[in-house]
Image (cartoon, rainbow, N blue to C red; front, top):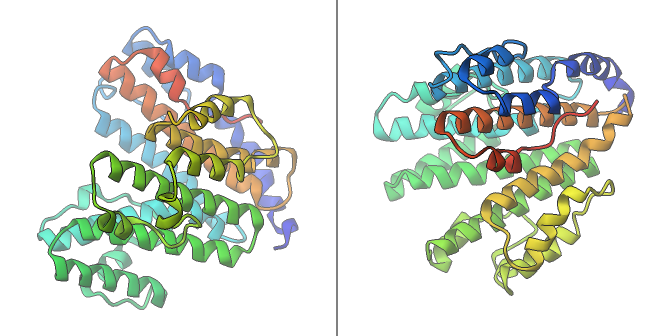
Length: 336
């Protein structure tokens, strides 16, 4: 990969990053005394929400997704290797796959659940799901959609669509990582696939699912197979897995997670937070360079985290959740 080809995009990113909400501004949002003050602060960000709309989380979500879609569209158009952007867009593509397949299965119109971006043409995706044929998508993607639908017809259970789309997503993710052939992107995909299997096992065990059911849920793209995951207590598996992923730019933020892993006390939510942190620190050192693809990844991660943080804060404000709880769950802030 020629790192020089990213110079122009990275220069543009260094300008656009000034629009990110700072840690200080996030604290002001959290500490806003009323909706009027909260709305006033949001007007200074890329996420303007009126006072009347603050109580409507669906409207808030549209504002957040509009900004995310705009960001993805810009970076995808400018990136010399758009597959890098695809790594971050894929979850939204496969969300749309699930929605369209479920709509087909139920014969209901679920278009209101579609996200109007996903690294590809939405009409082309709708055509593929409707006809199971496409000249727009690569053969492997078309075959995945056909396979998921055939599985659904065999079992008549919409959960098959959920499982099939999740597993297809991780295959697609691994395929992109292999195309990029880059150690950091490989590691990011390893973190995502391995943590998916761990989280899936934890959730399934919590509701006493059978071994045969759990095996169907796990992705083969992970280095952690069912046999490895069940070879001992889950906290031991987590400890070994985590020790192999420690970032070189180690942060004290990780200490609390390490202690909980060692004591077998890490919750599902905390593991999800840890995964975000590990991927964040994987690319965080790129703030010291203007060359190569990593500043692009860091920029997109920061936008995703910014939106997660805003969603958390605004939802907490509407539901009157404790502010300390909100602060504990915030993702890293963009530092430039």
